[in-house]
Image (cartoon, rainbow, N blue to C red; front, top):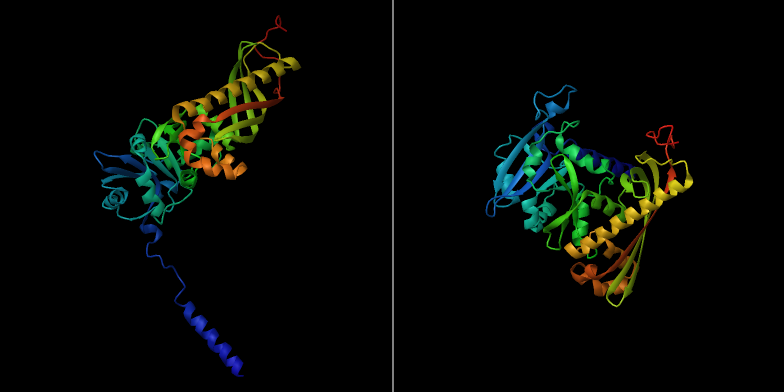
Length: 384
């Protein structure tokens, strides 16, 4: 009986305490929140900074009808301050609702700010509790971030969503341009941070940063795609190249990308061999050659491998000579394969180690299919 009374007493206490833990403790209701979808960061005059925001307008998102104007689904707010928190505080003077950054999908960075450096920017964003680590980061090549947030985009009511999807649409892997990945590269001794670069509505390539987080240059679009292959982030891509033997252009849908990176250490100098492979399907043949012939298809395959190998080698050489920065995460490979030697190399890797490394690239692709037709349509009966 006594045990039953104790059980009854404790059960009553638990039920009584549950009264105080039910319900919502958040005093900011959904109707009182301004949901920030995108943020732009720019360098202002002197030492001031400019923060711009794209805020979702619920009334413009919940209908299938077209908005009355191009900004019908979002609002744009811009403010200036001494630092990022000061600028963000000034933006609250223009917004009647509580600013909620928990749904922020992308951060745009103006080129002027990127060239000055992002160390102070990372300090604020790594401390703020509402920062989403999977927020995408994009550098605006030759422009300002605030201009990117003012523009509308086709197909998307909230324009920033379009910019995020573009990177995946051209063959990149979802989630490889996030704030989390940028921080991981910053903290790594064997990799240098890079970000996707855009100009207007178009992806232009990849922005390259040094150890001080200052923008030093860009990879072209072709180089950015090839870099994704080396780093293991490429899913599919259509390569178009000229076959000298046939004096015509050929387009190949390429997929199933693989890589195998082996390293050797001789003294303090690294020898790195990158072996790349993929499978391709013929998508377009602008030459006057019948791909039904096996030796013709082999000629195209050899020309494709030569084209890719030269492109990859030229890209690696340019990053060594022009930037001296490891944008391919090769230092991490050395770290895994030679952990003891890496201890002596890591501090100098992005200064002299990568520049002096001997890097070779081999590419081998296999053309599996020539399409539904083998004869080029431009062949007339006299050519057959």
